[in-house]
Image 1 (tube, rainbow, N blue to C red):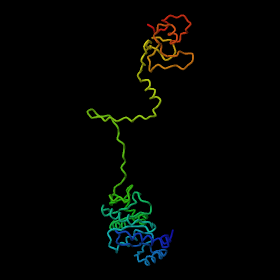
Image 2: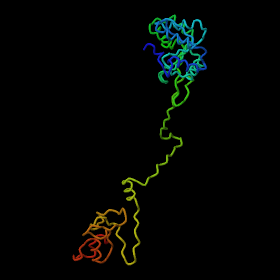
Image 3: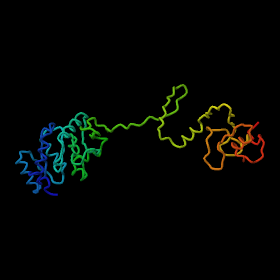
Image 4: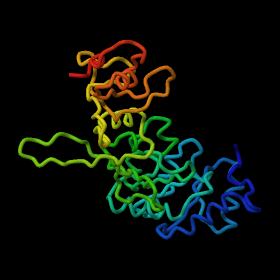
Length: 303
């Protein structure tokens, strides 16, 4: 897109808005607009003269040679490279990158080695002597066009630092390390070693809505509480079963709960039979018809 840096942005050229933001950076000593000698950039050079900003013009295709020539007469030690088609540069981020570069004594630093900042906030800092070495040794066309690729491709030769954004923080990471949020893992439960005091974990309290299985187990394990026997009546037989059958010591099962009344018609009234010497009482309790001729020992619960 030719002429994009001169496109209007809020009533002014985009390069003018860009220079306004860069002027707020406190760690930059001098700003120079480096462009080409192509006639298409004459309007840009005229705008820089109008704004009072220094402008240098060099080769169109060999951008590395253009930077080398622009820095030759400035006497600078470090060069901060910013692209003119990114008008949303952050002055505070540029100052932080300069401090990061100087504190780590790096030869090349950037915030785009590992992409942690949004696209459009890219900034690079390179030492002038390193840039001169790249100008002498770089032979690839891509290295001559993109200025710093020769340095970035050789981390074993040059001291390269990458500034990354800290997670959940407002400022950049100035220590140069990968700043990630620590991952908290729950402790693993294990059995105590021999001689090591064990830790007893408390059980989770029971809720009101217990499963039916737990309620059934509680009912089965409940103790049998017998009601007091009134005077003149016999004690209940402990070998009686819940089913309305004749009591038999061999086939009976022990009680798991208190005797209950049966609601089924035509069956005996009580599930427990009473020890009695009366044939009518034995017939009522054990289900034997009253009219049959049965002795008092017809109830097999009798001794």
